[in-house]
Image (cartoon, rainbow, N blue to C red; front, top):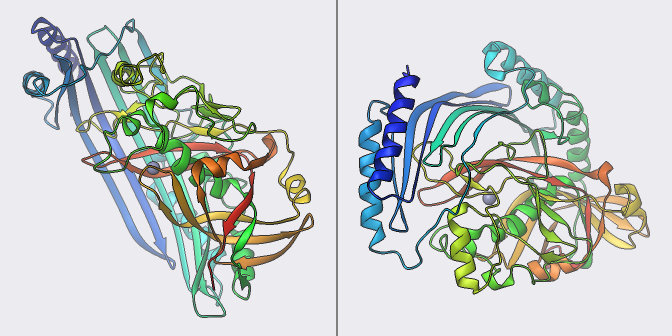
Length: 494
Ligand SMILES: [Zn+2]
């Protein structure tokens, strides 16, 4: 067990000590009980019942314009962790071209807790397995070859202290769920249809989310019907047409071609050896026309219940709701405190005024990186899904990713989806198999010509966003409406 009072006292002693050694800034995160539980039911059998629990602390020291970091799972080694972190910063300082600065931020004492009605970890395992078993039973049909039902629950209690006097305690809870079924189509190729638990953006996010039938269980019959419709369907023909993305596909479009390229560390080249760079340059911020006038994109979005809503980032910055793209113009990026000085230096002018509150680390032994919070397309004025379909002459509606291939700078993309519906002269006509579409990011968003209203908007949850070296898996959300793009290359040749 963690002797939290001693750890807290030694953390404060460590912070004072490194500042006396000439550090410009330091912080310590203590993760008291990072716990993740994963249940996977495969064809009615409990394939996975896994619990991962870990505890430890991480110390960052900024000295001579460079970071040093040390993490340990041994909470008796607080002082040693500070000494090693300072040593690492001193070594790194000799290699720094543009010194990092954290800027000024007044110290504050704050707490944050994910809004939760039913703590998933308070429930007996049997109760959670019963939910999966009930869903599996409803998915069962002779013609369905594979059934997968998954639920993942996560919780974290994180204490954060820094050399500015900030003291934060966060309690975070996430709940994810998926149902998926597969069956062979008329050509013997496996088709699949799935549904992921989403949120409405407001309300609570405990176990009550996954038992909310509107968000999860009620989609079972729809998923079965749509898979049945796919099996005898024709393949989408190659050609240019309007493409309407439902939120179940729009989230991935936003994630890969807006979220990742707007991470400031990618823009500055720090992810080139791993996740890639960005089509955006520092000088583009404030001037680049990223998309049409209909494109308004925010970070965080004051969404109450999403894995991308966490109160305070791992720099101690309160989560801020701000625009990344305003009527098509790139106006801001996803940033942490230490990157602001560097991007302004590289751009030769002030392009980022303050941190976007996007510094996040997955756990105690990883350093914070620029990560998406909730990156959202704001609802538009083009009505409901049906209104947009009614205003479409020749197009397809697509939903749910099956494959993605993306340029390392996110300058172009090719996505495959589970299902498409053909739209002819304002009417949804038939289901089509193996839909794909592709484009160049800037050209594609400039062809955005319909954005659904709030009735079509929902928050899609992302459980596994990978980034960093060593890899960090992060959770976040995307609030997205239905969106239509014109003249999009879609379907595969012959
Ligand atoms: Zn990602």
